Amino acid sequence: MKSFLYSVLIISVLILFGCQSKFPLNKDLTKQSYKFFNQDSVEVTFPGFIKGKTAVMGFIYTNCPDICPMTTHNMIITDEKLTEEGINDVQFILLTFDPDRDTPSVLKKYAEVRGINFDNWTLLWGDKENTDKLLIRFDVMALPSDSSYSDDGELNYYMIHTDRISLIDKDGRLRKNYQGSKVNLDELLNDIKELGE
Amino acid sequence: MTAVLTFLFLFIQVSENIVVKDQWVRPGAKGMGTALYFTIENNGSEADTLYAVTSDISDKIMIHQTYSKGDMIGMKMVKEIVIEPGKAFKFEPGGYHVMVMKLKHDIKAGDETEFILHFKKAGEVSVTASVAKN
Ligand SMILES: [Cu+2]
Image (cartoon, rainbow over all chains, first blue to last red; front, side, top):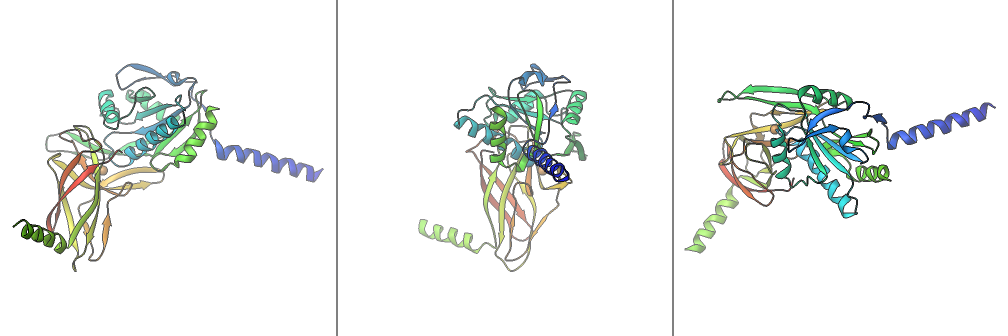
């Protein structure tokens, strides 16, 4: 009897950890709805607008010249690889955590200069309140640091932030987080394919 | 005449103590920022210091370092970079970068952009950086 219980325990632990290592999260994002605007200043509801699609979501600010472009580029390569394999139903999202400076038109320019295709990419801008609420949902932190006024009286600041790409399944559940600038692309690709099945 | 000039040019290149190579810049839109990366080799017998970078495409260029704090990431200004003799110093993604703010025009993949690196001993070193895809 004792050994039977041990077996059950061991198997449960294996199943639990087995699942956890693949998709450690299962957070239903559809319980709340947030108002955002896309790169064309058109209102979109998150996560409503991605319903039925697997989504890859990156968190950025456009005055970030080093880390955020790496995160963005990792998503672009992922999109290219999926397209090569004939997978076209994945939605890519970039959310700014610097809504004061990253207006929809700024976000659009950031995307255009990188050749991003808006058919399956959406850049999201929200007011401070909605942005903060969504960041908390995703456990993403972003704080201004090192601010200074330049000669022309303009406020300059950098941000210290979580380096993040998140994977959301077709049912609007957050399933896994990755380090945005250093994500293992094969891992992300395999996870997307597995969720898409 | 051309041969002499070519020879002189080669001579000047070879005799430089400071060599900047593998330079590239990320794409960026007018009014926004981007980052420049390169490797500096100090082939001289004394240390040299990079203290500024200038370019026609921006009036606001700084040397920056990316750092992490727990699982958060940020960047900060660095006053100067000392390159020891016989050593190379790399600016690379996730580490040191030259922060180019408020671009005067768009730069896109395939474009080329000129920068001048200012060293305490070697003086001005011009580089042409090609714009990468990312
Ligand atoms: Cu920087």
